[in-house]
Length: 272
Image 1 (cartoon, rainbow, N blue to C red):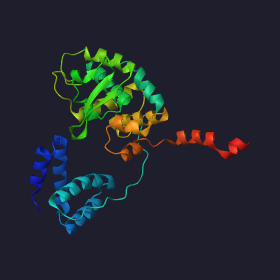
Image 2: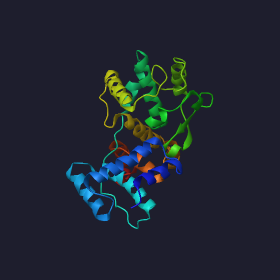
Image 3: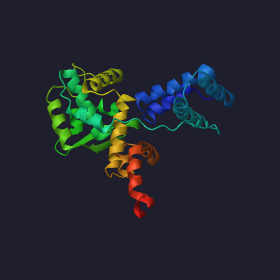
Image 4: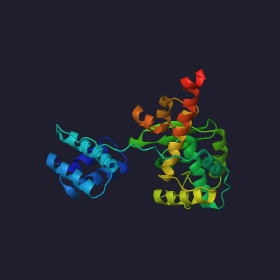
C-alpha cells in the first residue's frame, strides 16, 4: 500500500479538499488501524471489530467512503461494500415548534445570535458549517441572496425570504465584525457551542430540542420545500447536493402527508 500521508497530501493540494475533510481522512485511518489494516482481510477485521465495539452501520459507512477513496488512489481493484442501514425518518422540527421559534423574542447578544442563526438555517436549508463562515460580503440584502461555500469548497447562491432579510439586517447592524455569526471579538464560533446554545433556545422557546438538533432544521427546510410544491431538482441546488439521490432522502414525506394524500387519491373515497 502507498503511504496514507501521501494520499492525504494529494487530496489537500491537488483536490483542494477542506480542512474538515482532511480530518475525516485521518479519522478513517485511525479507525481502521484500531482493529485491522488496509489489506482485504484487515478491512474485514476492522468492520467486525467496529461492530463488536458498538459502532453503528451509519458511522462505519461514512468511513467506508473515505477508505474506498484511498483504495482507488492506491490502484486497488477492490472496494468495501456499504453495510445495510435501518431506514429511519429524518428528524424535523414540527410546524408548531417552528412557529414558537419564530415568535420567540430573544434577550441578550448570545440568544439573538443563535435565534438569527436558527431562522437562517430553517429559511435557507444551509449547513451549519456554511453559515459559520459567511461574511457580510456574502449577504446580498437587496437581492435576497446568500453566497455559501459547501463541501469541497464549492460555492452556491441560495435565496432567502423577505422576512429573513429584516431579521438579518437588524442582526448584522448589532456588531462591526466581518463574520456574520461570530464570537464577541469577531472570531469563528465553535460548533459544539452553537449546538449547546440551540438546545437552550429550544427550551426557552417552549419545546424540546429535536434529535440531531441543528441539522434537523435543514431537514425541516427540505420537507417544507417539497410540501409547498418545490421540485426535488430545485431542492438539490438549494441544499448543495452532488446527486439527486441525496436530495430525495431529505424529501421523504411524513406520515401525515401520506395520510392527507391517501384521502385525496383513494378509489373508495371517490366511489362513496
